[in-house]
Amino acid sequence: MRIITGKHKSRVLKTLKGPNTRPMMDRMKESIFNTIDSYIEGANVLDLFGGSGALSLEAISRGAKHSTITEINFDAYKIILENVQALKEENSVTIYKMSYQKLLQDLKEKFDLVFVDPPYKLEVANSIIEELIKNGNLNNEAIIVSHYYKGVYSVLDKENLEILKHNVMGTSEYIIYKYIGK
Image (cartoon, rainbow, N blue to C red; front, side, top):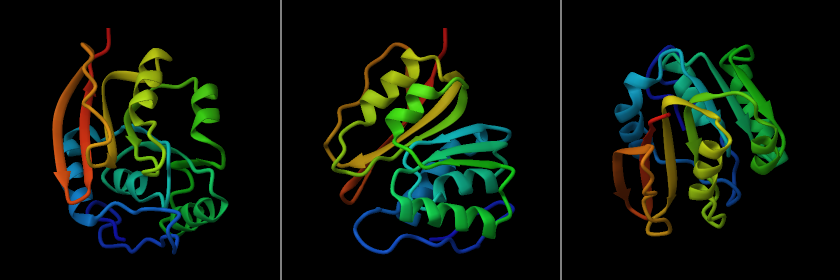
């Protein structure tokens, strides 16, 4: 796992060994970031299932202002912490060791870029997006990247969500939405 571009280009990130996390393939990550690149500069990022922190750290490398990451698995939390420290981004990243539900319940701020990449066994991506909208946690024109096992979700059909890209790669699928606030 590596940072694709930006100030930390080519830096290798640690990942958790074993089946507990599922790092996004570089090819998919590159496709996603090529689509959202113009929205990243100065963004406030939310990463609800941190894993290794790779998505948040890629965004920071490309100019995002700050990322809030949550990860409930203690070993994955430690990996994220190590990756943040290795890149010397402690001032740009806040990491919480808690469930995504608890974080969503406590969130008071708004975000410009949100990564919703839950473990495949958790079929919660669409309900998370709906909760973020309902709770007012998205800035106008916020980007939401939803990554999941192919065929598990239907595209959210909401008047305030515009689809920027929908793609299938192997057994994975992702949708990139733009939130059109009121």
